[in-house]
Image (tube, rainbow over all chains, first blue to last red; front, side, top):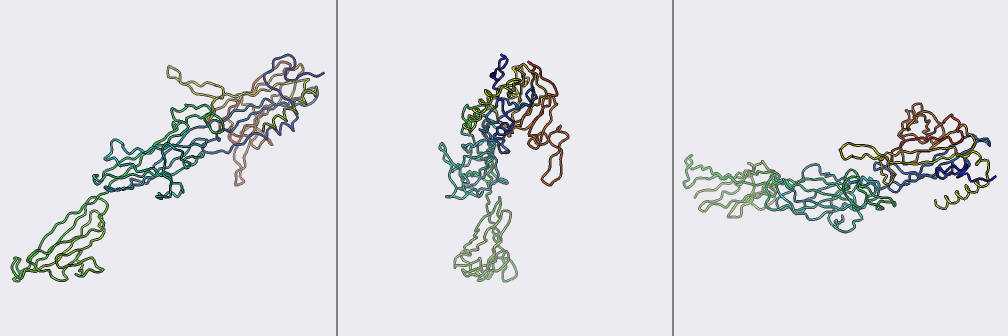
Length: 341
Length: 158
């Protein structure tokens, strides 16, 4: 007797029934695809295959049967996070042309995905709007902005460096310029948004057939786009000069009479924040007076008149002292003497 | 894989026709799967529904249903159902709690609470659901002609 076991007894089949030997069962089971476990989850396109088997004793001896092979495909989850990775405000100054702010983009999805980038420099609620120069991808992955080496992001085009594998991260730099008119302590917010090219939307939005590996793509909890903001902070220093004179006359008085020596003192005070670099203090010798050779001091230290290694010089009409880089909150005091003939 | 499958199918078909022994007490085993979805009803309350696995992403809860039925005329005894867990699925319990499990690829079996897993340093720790590789139901019952039932287990897409 030969009966079709798929439909024995005239009862409608529940599904495909296959009878096989245990050896064959083992071969089928090991054929199941194993997927590497990642933070982002099973890779999109992986087939989940389920086969149940059963053994039982029949009149003819032990029998092993198998269920149908159930296959479902893991769809692509679209998720991304953007993180500003600067340790604090990025310091800028009035008119600065290349502020570098660093962001990290992470593909939290389970499929390879390309992301588009948008920088937002015109945020409300901050003190000024910088000008976007360009977005640069850290293509050599050294974490440092290398002008001319790292790729400039091209909007509306494919940027291979932004095709990220699941769990992969990519550092991106936003380069901005600071307007000249900003003041010390002004701050500006600079945002970077990354969006999955497959699509974005409310979590759960799906794109049929658009997933990696032939499945669908589904928007995850992040909405498939993400934004983070970093801040620019202006550090601007300014200097004020205060000049005073002390007179010693030949009669131990302090009148400006012939023979009196006038000691001029110039106090340069740097305020604001940051530093003033290469501060040079010059002062012409007043008409009708004679410069006293070798009388220049800086912070009470004597300087020579010659143009040489030290910071001071006298050129016949004026004194000049190079005070160097002076941090905000500090002063530099320069003195020199003239004789009233 | 496609070629492999068709070869296997051909071999199986061959056995099916040639072997009357197995056809004498045929049991059917059918595996099915659903995805749990939380949906918000118009009144704002949330409810969980089971739907066909049209969209499956990591973290989704799957419900596997294995249905069995004795469609033959003879009685089957010592009925044991084994379901290896797909690699991308983490075990999340069964509906009846009567299963034994394996955490070593089917070599040894027991109730989950009795099993141990060897840690990298050689010491043992209690096995967790995430360690489960196989599920087995030893039904200890005789399936007469027409008898049927179903076994349900849950898994989470890794």
